[in-house]
Image (cartoon, rainbow, N blue to C red):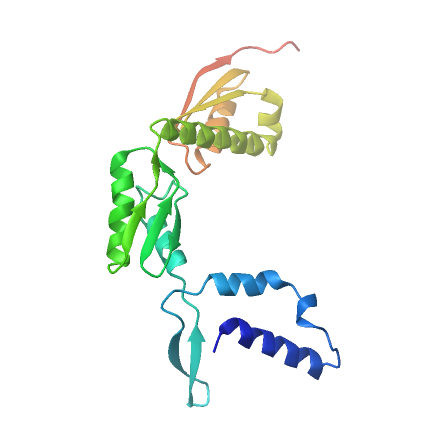
Length: 211
């Protein structure tokens, strides 16, 4: 039975049993569309589970070939940074998106071929060498923002107003302070941000304040 029809029937039964005659067209159809789109070309899978009283029951599991493939891309460290889209049809799989290297495009084809052995692979992924640098700059910008938020939670670091620059995960701090321990606190706070690989404090000057 079509899972969308089944879900619709269950919803109508629940509403009638509750004393409310709400037409299905008035419900949120996005859920139904999502369920329908997540069906794989091979259809439903069934699994037998044992209940608490020892009896067994058969449940339907909606499997999506699209989601399975996207999860496989995310499981590979070389493809993880990229947003690769896939469209699984009855006899073919179409890949779209962007990567930085031709090797990464070929890798996406290999992963897809391994999972979809009986289908033709149509790889429309665009190779854009500058993409890696663009993505790195975006990550660095986010790291800088996260560090600023962390500094803002500390009264001492908030008052120092250190300048923060992040390049390829390396954080450089500049500014001035009266106490070296404050530079250490800043470096430790930046180090706690996931993605930071080093913290440079060479440009923090130790100077007496104007009291």
